[in-house]
Image (cartoon, rainbow, N blue to C red):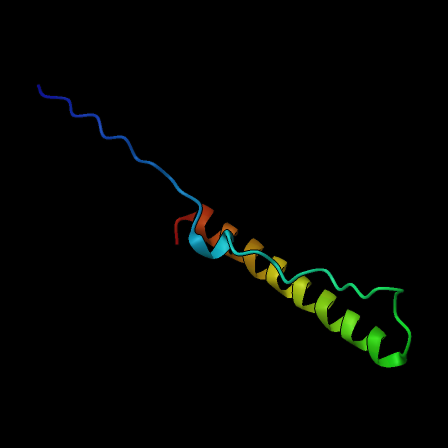
Length: 64
């Protein structure tokens, strides 16, 4: 009887290593309504990235 051991290395997929969008920042803070909209867009984009990463992690963990 021959036994062969195979080491399987699991790595985090590159799509999960991407950095989220940068945090909105403006010296002195928001000054006009448009600044609040820009900040909201950045935060929403960050949430979308995080959501996509979680979905990918779950798919990867299931092996699909």
